[in-house]
Image (tube, rainbow, N blue to C red; front, side, top):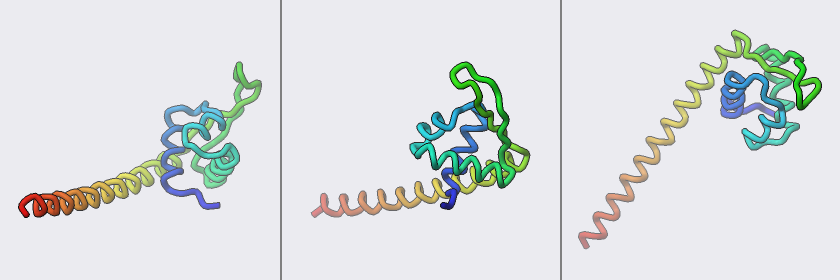
Length: 111
């Protein structure tokens, strides 16, 4: 299973803001299964992008906090740039489609 750059971006973004988010919270926020979140977090730990540390939590006796490593911060910047570039390309494509539809509508209205 490959970790998509968009999922990696979203996960790193959430963990940067909320390092004590539970795996269940992450799965719900990202709309993926708990198993997939577990896999993603293990992948990020293995790649050295995050560190997991145990801590005591009132609702869960033993939970983890996920910290971005310096490599994780760098990766977040890289995938943020990729994500932004992809979204800007989508916006440009939509703008082109809108202009085509407007042109077609104008021609039909003149007829």
